[in-house]
Length: 345
Image 1: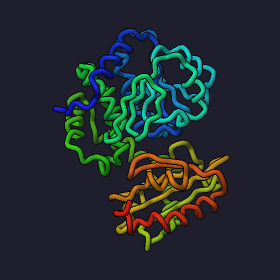
Image 2: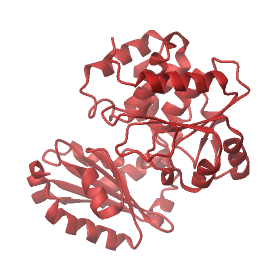
Image 3: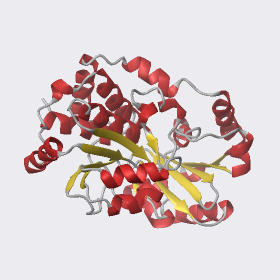
Image 4: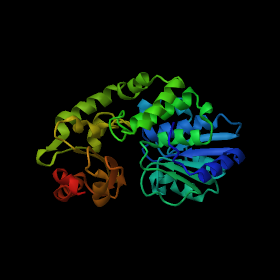
């Protein structure tokens, strides 16, 4: 049995929203990852069990190609491609679910539409320090993923029987991707109770792993090799690895959204490395991904130097300036946040 963690008053209120609502929109963050798409589509398929007029998933921009196999993925509305249609959906919604983000700025250009809508807003998220912009906030940073929380919400609503194979596949994918295939943030026995229940719903977890982690485009695989051979810089005295990619390099390898997903985890396979950082150049800023193992708080590093945050072992940030300057700031930060002294943080 799963521990009851979600406040019963919030579940009762949410049930009222679902019963009375007729138009539902589910939104998630920019650069949506496996948990963003998995939790959104998992909730989407659950809501499709009810006789509702409209249920839509809207995300700010494209998501990785290795997630497009997921049931319902073809019906996701991409705001960047259809901004007027997406804005109309959000403005007309009775209920707006905000999944896998804790601050309005995380939805990028969609933020104004999310703020302006009169829809009853529901946040389901596992990032710390949620902003108070939703009527219902279901936020538990100790959870492995937002997808795990969606499963728990459905169970708390008394609707586990409404979880079909499509819902289960999406939830499992979100849980798997947000834990590095259950290699971090996954040492809670109840996670495996949930996996057991999802398998009972008919998922093939081995096939899901293959689709997400072992089916690459040629350009993605070549880019990965280039990153590892040419671009990885080691700081062995600080147990750290860093790599950078310029826009020119991304274009050379015909970069598509999601092609670098998971790259930041690769250096952590090296013995003695406990902190890995990836800098990717975009048009107006540098996007930064940080990963760590053990007690080193990469989220504190991201917050201190790159206007970011996230989880202790998985976080992100951004830098407005040149790639060289971003790396310079990072190197200065290593003096204070030296992984060799991680127990101090």
